[in-house]
Image 1 (cartoon, one colour):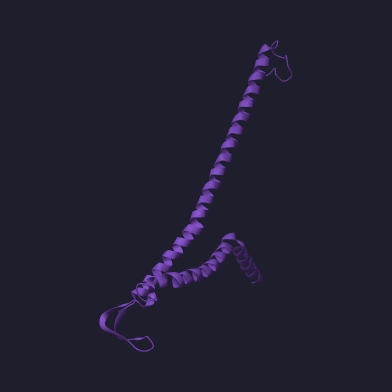
Image 2 (spheres, rainbow, N blue to C red):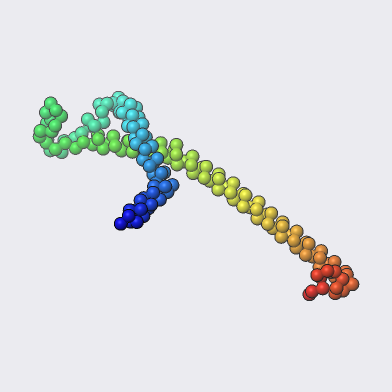
Length: 165
């Protein structure tokens, strides 16, 4: 039974120590903080701009599916069926702002960086291929020179180790 506990704890430790678990935890924490930033932008910038054309709170925009829509002092609907399209509009704007910020501040720069890095890696590999080809050419020239020397000598046995065909 103690071996099972040790193996479970060892497996759990291995799971936690994998890099992608840490990356996921960092992403969740940053995402939670980023949500506050986006909500502040929507409440502080978008809602006042929309408020110039109507109410400052997008959640106040609604229509009534079944008239009359009446609410009590607490804001609860007492009759009618309200459609709260302002809440949906607010959520869509929050999503679009979040997506734009993530794309332009994170995805686009990272993809440019990765493309530049891949280009540098390809250039390094190309240089390595050129070096390998030039080394091969040098070795071929050495071989040709040795064969030429062997051919100019007085026949078999004229040099050490060169008497083999």
